Amino acid sequence: MQQTRHHPRIRSFLKGEIIHSAGAIRIECTVRDLSHDGARLQVPRSVPLPDPLDLNMLQRNIHERCTITWRHGDEVGVNFHTAKRPDSWPEQLQQPMTNDRALQVRMDRLAAERRE
Image 1 (cartoon, rainbow, N blue to C red):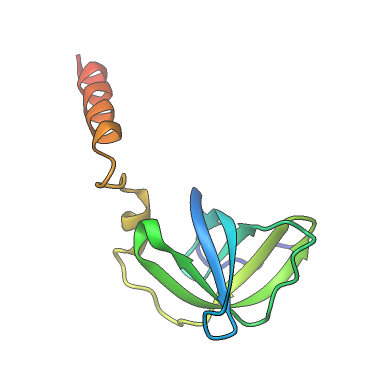
Image 2 (cartoon, rainbow, N blue to C red):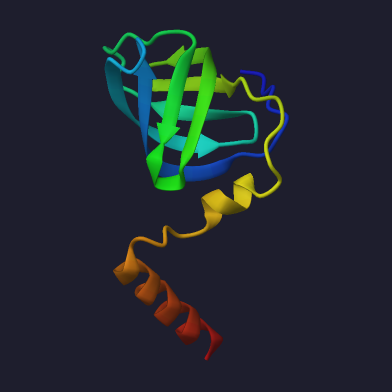
């Protein structure tokens, strides 16, 4: 398969939610990777998807309108309708979630050990 991606991917394991029918239908998914202009989602192959669709990543406060570009098994590639992303968007995804205090404490401890 030829790669047509214009921006590098950021690997992720984020909980996502596909929303359609004016919010009446919500489908859970996993966002496996992201770029400025799209994402790779993991959704059970038995689940029919609308096109276009809305994708929410509540952990990162991101909401995007998307078009499906490919689907193979339980993976779905989508392109975001938004033409230009803010420069800080990839860094926002790479930062740990601040609402998980135990995880942040552990990460700080590991970083300190690494510096020693």
